[in-house]
Image (cartoon, rainbow over all chains, first blue to last red):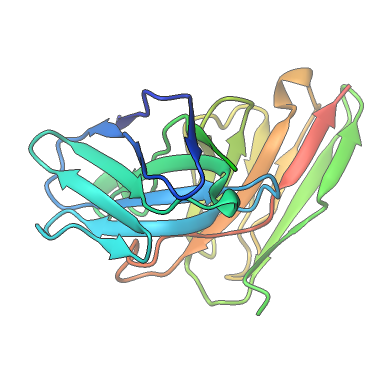
Amino acid sequence: AQTVTQSQPEMSVQEAETVTLSCTYDTSENNYYLFWYKQPPSRQMILVIRQEAYKQQNATENRFSVNFQKAAKSFSLKISDSQLGDTAMYFCAPGFDRGSTLGRLYFGRGTQLTVWP
Amino acid sequence: NAGVTQTPKFRILKIGQSMTLQCTQDMNHNYMYWYRQDPGMGLKLIYYSVGAGITDKGEVPNGYNVSRSTTEDFPLRLELAAPSQTSVYFCASSTPGVVLGPGYTFGSGTRLTVV
C-alpha cells in the first residue's frame, strides 16, 4: 500500500508571506504523479499543482511551486505572497498509472492552512 | 461545463435506512471513483471503476455497493446505514490513456449524516 504523510495538521501565515507545506510518501514505483489539492470551506476539491516523477524540474503555477525530492520521496508545496483566499485544507496525493494501483490517488490527512490579515 | 455532478448535496439518514448517492460525468471519462472523507482525515477510496461493467473495491468498501452500467453514471449504494458511515462522499473521474495527467475531476461532495 502507498502511504502519504503530511506532518503538519495546521499551519498559519500572514498575508503576503511565504509558507511551505510538507509531504512525504512511500512507494516502490518509479513512474508516478504527484498532486496538491486545495479544499476551501466550500468543500470543493481544487487542483493546485501537479508534478511528474520523471521530470527533474520542479513544477510552478503562479504563486505555487513544489520542491520535489524523488530520492527522499518528498513533495513540498510553497505558497508565495499568501492571500486570504488561500485559506483551505491542502492535500498531497501521489498517483500511479500501472498495475493494481492504476489510476488511483492516495491522499494524506491534509494540512489546514489559515492566512490571516 | 457540468463536469462531475453529485446528488444530493446533503442527506440525513436513520440507522438501517438505505440510499443511493448519484454521480454522473459528461466528459467521457472511463475511470470513476468514490471516496469518503472523515473529519481530520484524508480521502479513502471506497470503490472505483475503469469502465462500464467493471468495478472493484478500494480501501473501505464494507457497507457499500456500486454499479457502472454506463460510462456516465457511477452510483454508490448504502445498505443498512450505520453511524460509522457519517462522512462526506466525493465522486471523481479521470481520463484514460494519460490517466493521471490532469488529475481527477471531483464532484462537489455529499454530506451524509446517519442518526
